[in-house]
Amino acid sequence: MPGEIKGIVRPPLKMPEELQGQRSKLAVRQDPKVQVPLVITLFAWYCFLRTAVFLVFAVIVGIAAETPVAQFIATRLDPVPPPIPAEGAFYVLAILYAMIGWRWMTRDWRARWGAMFMSGATAAKIAVNLFADRAAGNPTPISPQGQQAIVIAILWNLLVCCYLAFYPGMSEAFKETPWE
Image: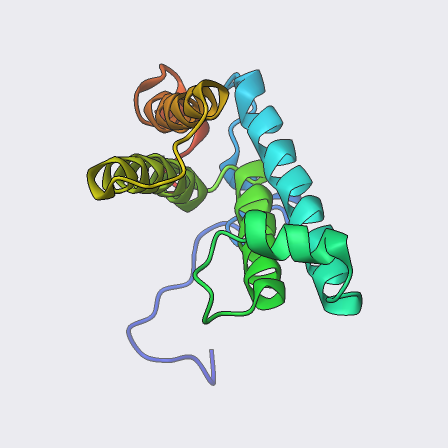
């Protein structure tokens, strides 16, 4: 035929219409045979809940920065050091958790690794701050209830990290490549 490139052989059969374009769909990655653990969905909604909370905190600190509620949120609930404004930190954290929740719902393997890192890093940060506080001899000691809350926060974050790393079925629910 005229206009064909030399050396290229046409396929012997025409591909059916219902099969054309399937390779380009990213949503096909999720295998319907894989039983998705309930905790995957719950964790995604947990991330969306944290996103909403951080957005509310950012709006409160941004709109009414001089009110006692905004001062409490900025001083007690801001996880970032003081040179960075609390409002900006809350917006960044909201975007981060929204992205993780969205990737988690689509069962992207990077979301699993990102959530493992964040929970492990949070547990390590809390533990390091606790040990540094004790080594420095803080003049305002932590109450027993506060110490229990800190230990529970560390254990919770370690549990999330270990669940994502070692729970059976996680590697099947999160495929690293779409062709597996």
